[in-house]
Length: 80
Image (cartoon, rainbow, N blue to C red; front, top):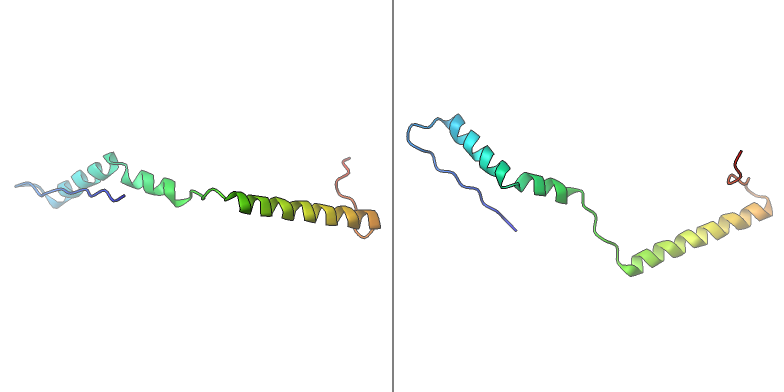
């Protein structure tokens, strides 16, 4: 969705005045604010991808528990 902001130079208006008016109009139309919001927004993951990630976590957890039982790695879950 493109939003165009257009300003025409008035008679007797300086270039800095034109730029200031343009900046105000861009700011009021919140184009830059919306662009910054969209810049870092992450897509929602599909149910398949979420399930795949959950299965990977479960598998890795089971592997670590198995290695702890075998005595190959030290159990770091135990608190103080």
